[in-house]
Amino acid sequence: MKLFRRIKERSSSSEAANTYLIVGLGNPGKEYRVNRHNIGFMLVDKLAERLGLIFSRVQHKALVTDGRYQGNKIILAKPQNYMNNSGQSVGALVRFYKLAHANLLIAYDDVDLPFETIRLKPSGGSSGQKGMKSIIQHLGTEEYPRLRLGIGRPPGRMSTPSYVLQDFSKADAEDLEIFLERAADAALLFITEGIEPAMTRYNRSDQ
Image 1: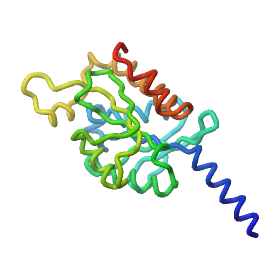
Image 2: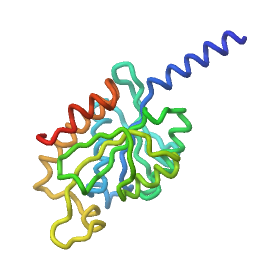
Image 3: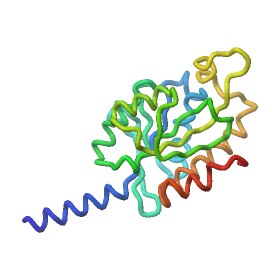
């Protein structure tokens, strides 16, 4: 009985090591669907499309799906408790799946980066992004990987809240699709090779 328990524990530990949670930040509801603030949702939708997955269940107040990629289990999540409270879902999912923080990747919009710019980081503060601030609060640490997706600064005197809650323009549509494909590539490289190789390849200023 003790031997069986040890084997089960080793198996569970091995599975957790090969399990990754990718969370896209955004706001639920059709009115927010193509907002700049929802580019994190758009990314995990793109990943689900790539992996042939459908968001078919709600778990810890998040739309969730999961599948396999090159021997790893990938869980995709879109918190449904609005951007400012994203940490409630993320913290609960991390605890439920017993994940190391290094196996978590948060994708979110960043106004401090030009549109189409990707920046992966292994850790860091919230930089004023309220979803990230909530996640840091609920995880109790800043030590987890993140994928910052540049949406650019608001034009003229437009306020940042107004800008991020504005839809991407039709003129942006083609570039946005290419951007999301590249960001999905970056997220999958993070899964297979880790944060440092993904940073080396995708944190380039000439892309």
